[in-house]
Length: 236
Image (cartoon, rainbow, N blue to C red; front, side, top):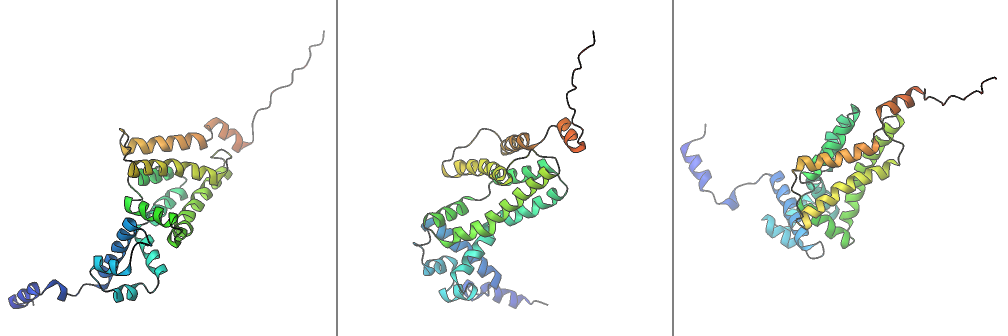
């Protein structure tokens, strides 16, 4: 049982003396590092600045993240929308819910992912030739594109989609979404339509380009495409 005295003593303790759980400190370091990298770039950010913003010592940063690569990977794991997005669409893909697969992707990006901080972070890393951009490409972007292109190829093989280059189709769809996101974040070029309407438009464009019309699809799957009859000359 907690006494009145112990409650008073706990609340009276200075914040610096209260023990913060390790996972909370670790998350604070990640957020502080990501924020500073997005503001100042990688070359312009010092470890002591991350420590000061997170309210920890530099030694504690190195305890949680022994190498720079560990910190960068933790930032991507925390900030990247790709893992959660993949989890959401894989179940729909297994059920062959084509429009829903593309709709979830569109809703996620048009709805605000990646956020402004991550966009700045990735741009800084790419412009500075920093290793985080390569980590993001290899472990997040490429994994997602491999999934989406693989799904498109699978549906082509099953006769549901037009025969297209699957990776180009995946890039075309994502290109529409990412470009819209960049215009919105970097240039504040808002559209008057709702996010739902914008997402639906992108999905309709993609599905109209991929889907095989139902009659043509049935003919392809059954192998019973009709051949024009040869005319025979009448005997006089």
